Image (cartoon, rainbow over all chains, first blue to last red):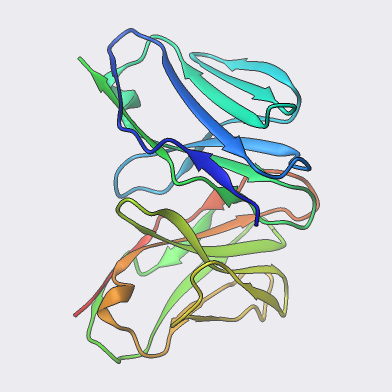
Length: 111
Length: 113
């Protein structure tokens, strides 16, 4: 069974700090990796995706992928209280497969 | 505008009364899925469909039915709802040809009393 694991948190960081969120996956054939942000009661929204090993930066967000170790992480620089949400990691093994979601990590940014 | 539309957004119903939650997407996506989300349990997949007339069970299919007669629509049917189906439901769609992200509907908060 394909699994995506995340620490449920809550992860608490002070405003302005770097928040680091981690995700591990079980299937070595996984090809696409996504990070979603979800505010309470709202639908998940995509914030980052990464396909290749290494880092990918977009504004305050950096996604890091290490396929050999089977983990993907999300760094949020200069964390703001508005970043407080649950962050879901999702993995796609390949074509014609639905995304597999982790249970999410709850992030709390303290002002 | 690319979107996934769910209806209704909120629904309170009684045990045993059949209901349907509709989901429609305008992106010509092959994949559509239904999830339920409960506190502490994350997103759990109920059913998914890889294309018209092709549906498969997810992790928690008991008590639910789906159909995929047209590519754009993927309704979720609760034939005899029970209180343990009280939850927040999301529909999502994605392209089957490319490893792209899933687009989510706005969610349906269902309460079964």
